[in-house]
Length: 194
Image (cartoon, rainbow, N blue to C red; front, side):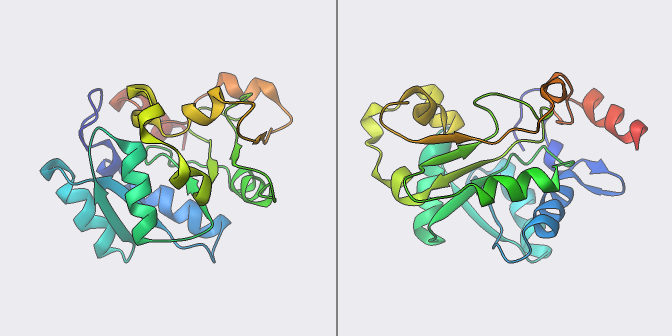
């Protein structure tokens, strides 16, 4: 909710419902048996988001604002599992096939499945699947501020240490487009294209 470019964007209306509703709905359509948990900050600015997702029956975990890496780890201790699918809350038009392909790429020996190592999906239609045991085992002292804010760059930089698998669309030109909501103008453009 405290986005610098578009405060409150995840609750902004898009096609008659908040942006976050669309993200959660796309996840439910693509992966109906996978539990959904919104991981947000414990700051008062995120109170409306936490209230909304609980109102629609989705679990919410709240943790540190500026350390998203640690927020994820704390959330995974409360909501345990083998894998965590990381989706940005400003992506109301997630590609269902992409979500299924990312989850299907999970395998023994894989630490991270991503669509961002070599981008071939539109900005705003990306996902990363992280092995929970790998995420929990990272020494927090090795992380930069950038790692803490964005969760997965640490794994991308440590290519020899972690096995990262990239899922591609088959059309690299898609990476030149965007369906992300970073600004009010982005939201208005997506709404107009509907």
